[in-house]
Amino acid sequence: MKFRIDLKIFILAILFFVTNQIKIYGMIMTFAIIHEFGHLLAGLLLGMRPEKIEIKPFGVSIDFSISRKDYNIKIKKGNLLELKKIFVALAGPVINILMIIILVMFKIFSFNNYYKMIMIFSNITLIIFNILPIYPLDGGRILKSIIYIFKGKYIAEKYIYRISYITLIILTISSSIAILYLKNIAIFLIVMFLWGLQMKEEKIYKNRKILYDIMQKDLIN
Image (cartoon, one colour):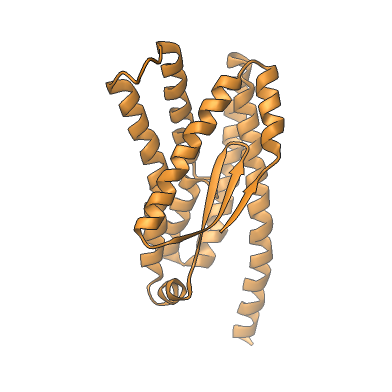
């Protein structure tokens, strides 16, 4: 299993420290790790094997490998594998919801109301951003798998990137307005991070699309 740390995490930590928001960033990262643990647990329960763990500026990412057995299932029973992916993607936000319920219902150790509110805010932030239909966030993964089940892989990839771009544009406009009122750099940095993720995934998709087009031409000929 591979392990990688994105060095941009240290740049963001400095920015949050300078703007006196290091506590918020620390909480977001802490609960992002717990969020990803939900994905890991769900994947392991479904017999999936983690291939790579990467610590990113706003959380942790776990990639699961597809074994030869799973690959055969993907061909013969593709919908079953997509349902597993949906379950794994849902596990992260569910963990954050459980954390909010625990924080609201019970008194956690000796945390005062200020830290309690930061923890609740961090979990709400993670839920909101992760359920957005932006690939590769949880919401984007879930939507892509749903489209895959009904329309197939090619259509799923084609639609999910268009939906991601539209969502990001709307998010950028709305967050720009929020930044003016809240004066919170965290919102701006998260949106920029999402644009970076989207552009990276779009590049990978374009390379795959070239292969799809070549395969389709071969089939026609």
